Image (cartoon, rainbow, N blue to C red; front, top):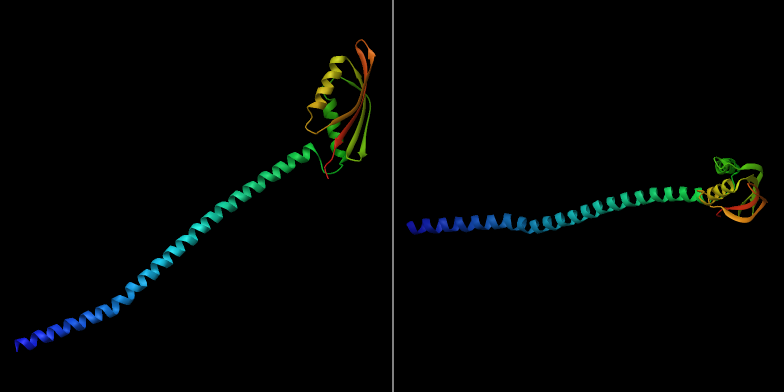
Length: 165
């Protein structure tokens, strides 16, 4: 009888082991799939984070390019806008101590032609030429003539303010 009890216990243990393996082995197999899915999600997340960083960099670069374009437009405009020259020319004359005899400006091929006729002392004319040289707007002196003697000089000047198209 005792032997029969051992056999029954052994059969029950075998059945329990079969049940345990039957339920747990598929789940252990699923763990590798869960791990692979987790790795895939982690890779997707890292790609998303890197993409967000790149988008932020691109937006910053686009903002910088807009600022560069604006500054370039100040140096070489893309079109003729007379109102800008009505501001530019008085700024050149300001604090230069030259007398303005005449000035005119108008569009020509490649930019805007500015014609000036001023008078003053040598130092005033020199200061005025330095203001032209240091202007934010690119100004290309095409013709320059200075006449007079002593401390009273006349200067005629033709300047091209290029435009970019």
